[in-house]
Image 1 (cartoon, rainbow, N blue to C red):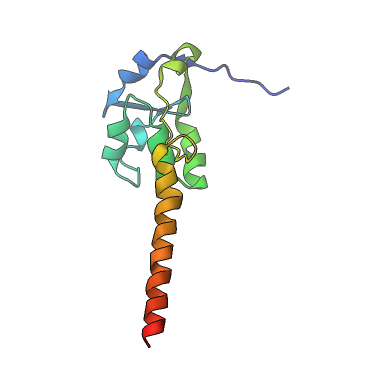
Image 2: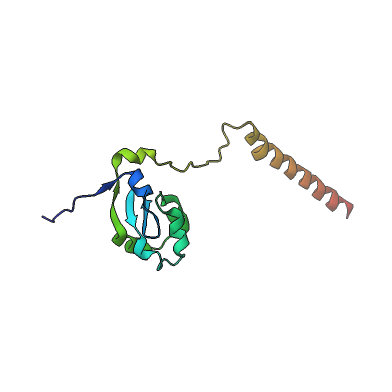
Length: 132
């Protein structure tokens, strides 16, 4: 059997303490990364990582659209995981969905206004064609 390495867990408080150039940790998908040695090599610049230091960088990391190579390279910087007790303390981004079923304005904005607009355009076209 393969020798399994025991996972080292870190609390949010421990991670928050590593927010300077001598020790820069970030959290991505509950994995703790020590990116101190990577600061000067980061293609986006050192300040990008420093802004996220000591906190959850998951949303920022995903928004950038890192390549497969970047994701594979990042694995060498993993030093542990966020302690399971602290995972619920991380604010998840709220997703905004546009719905048309529960909104009073959705009926007007999605059906009536475009319908009236189409009708007016059709009348204008008819008058234009009739005048020629």
